[in-house]
Length: 424
Image: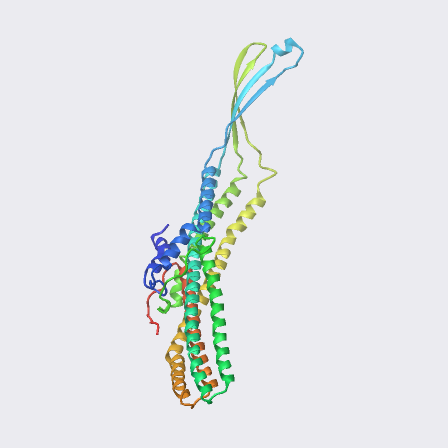
């Protein structure tokens, strides 16, 4: 394994320990991203299964290097039961024969097994990166669900503060009792959204615990800096990083294995020699003799043409399969990069214009409502505008972090801190 790739495989854990998007610890006792990744790497059965696949490939590699077993034979000639004279004249032969592979068949077989072993190792590293990416995404979903509940709690509390004010206006005759019911309905809708968010949090916690190899969640919360953002690298840099993805690197090993299988298919037509040595005992003369023999098949009926063609097609198919794999990775990384950049632009627009305007409008209407200058519908609409803008910002941040986790999982490198943005 190259030094460059080894660094890439550790990049996600390094990123988790650095103060990037969501990994900065805020709470005490809550699960952090580095802890989550470490537990997933040590407990998820996907890694153990990949290790067993490597062990199986190593066993095939060891077996491919084995020589054919010798064959021991025993023969009795000129033997006729019931006649003592014939029995005494029987010829007894003890034979030892050995198949000798020619043309480098064993070397080709070992090379194919070695390619299979290297491919299994790359598949394991690809599984690790995929697991890290999925775990990071699951961590973000839990963190986002927690923050969404906090937002909805704050919004519900803000609406609940309107109820006493509305009641005083009703008692003073400035408003009708129907307006109190309207406020209560708005508070009820906010609480309903909060319950939905709690259900989403329960689901997200369960999915994250499964990635860590748990039947049930053993944590109550996760901790991270949800609001800190970084700008991903240019897409051209991500394309170069994709070339080091283990999913693509393994095709080198696959090609080596298939080339060796093609060589084995061609060498199958080369006849192998079977050499034998025997000891023969003549019963009638009571004499011993040695017997030597050599045999080999005549390759006139089967020259393995079909097997050679199949192996040729498999070897030539490798580049196409790698190209398909690469285009799939490019598509996923491109989509994640576009989503991250779009989310950054959305967050910037919300924080620069939409949120300040909505909050300013709400503040103005709240002050004027007590003086009777605004209606209940106007103040409820102002609250809804602020709530919608805050939830839009929240969803954009969650989309950004999910996209970043996808990029890191496919490129094996952390997002470069090109430009940091702080939460409001």
